[in-house]
Image 1 (spheres, rainbow, N blue to C red):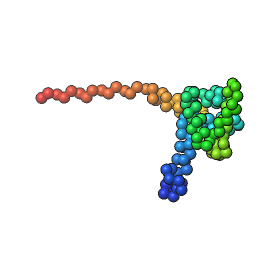
Image 2: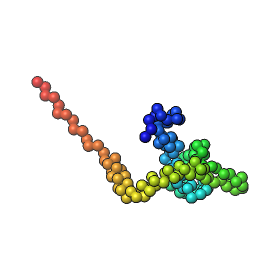
Image 3: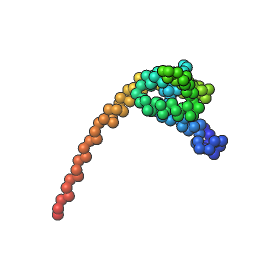
Image 4: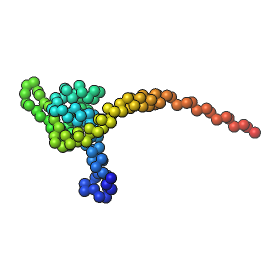
Length: 138
């Protein structure tokens, strides 16, 4: 690990910090994952990234484009046709995310079980607190 003092770029505590700032957002790693095999249109990404709203998907695609991770190609056709593809920087980031995908695949059953246990634990209401015994008047 590198100390913050040794870093050439101020503002990041380490390389992981720089990476996390680029992929910050619940859906960005999945967007990158679904672009690895090649260009995808917005509708295909929307179907692939289950649970994301249109507003958030558009916002995160714009952020990834601004960060140089994806390129948006507008074909200027009617009906409109736009697709997104990874840039060379984005392909490098996708390669760095690949081990996380492998870990998730290898541990999916355990993670599913742990998340179910967490959901049960969080759903249990706290036990009622018993009132302390009233002080005896004396």
